[in-house]
Figure 1 (cartoon, rainbow, N blue to C red):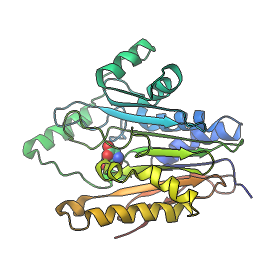
Figure 2 (figure 1 turned 90 degrees about the vertical axis):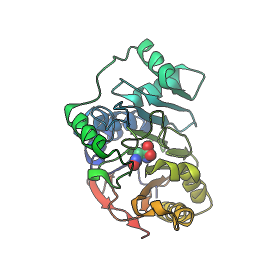
Figure 3 (figure 1 turned 30 degrees about the horizontal axis):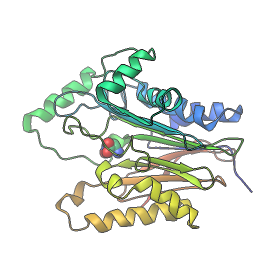
Amino acid sequence: QIIKPVVISTWNHGLVANELAWELLINGRSALDAVEVGVKTAEANPDVQTVGLGGFPDREGKVTLDACIMDQNNNCGSVAFLQHIKHPISVARKVMEETPHVMLVGEGALQFALAQGFKKEKLLTEKSKKAYEEWLVNSNYKPIINIENHDTISMLALDENGNLSGACTTSGASWKMHGRVGDSPIIGAGLFLDNEVGAAAATGMGEAIIKTAGSAMVVELMRHGKSPEAACKEVVERIYKIYKNAPDLEWLQVGFIALNKNGEYGSYCLRPGFNYAVQTKSLDNQLMDAKYKI
Ligand code: SD4
């Protein structure tokens, strides 16, 4: 029996995001609309310092955003290294719907956004500027895992029609090099879905997720029969294998969420601290702790 609709999304900020997405899903709207509306809550919230407005800047003090979106027909849109626009997920959707391309980056993405009517805004809040100035004192690049329990927001949804969509949006790793792009806007890394099989999305150290084509791999493993959780676990184990002797292992965190066509969901991460929010008809919007490897 297929459980639908279902929405799942990463971290504590997933709860608020799910609420809005769920409203749409139970009213028969598409998973695509639901995931866009859902993740926009984190983009607009200045207290979520890892997504959108108020995101931590790069090492030059610039807030640069990455996002992507994908629908049941394998249509996808993505923006990377985008500055000054509060809702990169909506720009990504426009890339998907209004251009012959999948991905726009940097100045080109900004130009496109402005042409589509998006407004230029100051995204660096006083709070994030202060954190940046404190970081500048030593300027050590050491990504902190599970940042204040809200990191990239990735959301997957299965709608009443049995269609899947996903969205992923982030300000990326704080204090990253100017121009650095993580996994989140890369289809197959930060997000992937196959409407015949399921969907997967990631959070955590983008470099590790890109190296393993993380989300695409989770979906492929589900195609070959693994449950959502088992598929996420297998990819986390591959990442662990690559990094297990690396000096940077201590600050490595990666987490995946997955949702299959039957509405079954699951998650797995490298180390404790990652959770995700789930809403179905029989389960009130709630946080689940992901199982972990080490
Ligand atoms: C990235 N996965 O840019 C994103 C953001 C994140 O720890 O989760 N950073 O790598």
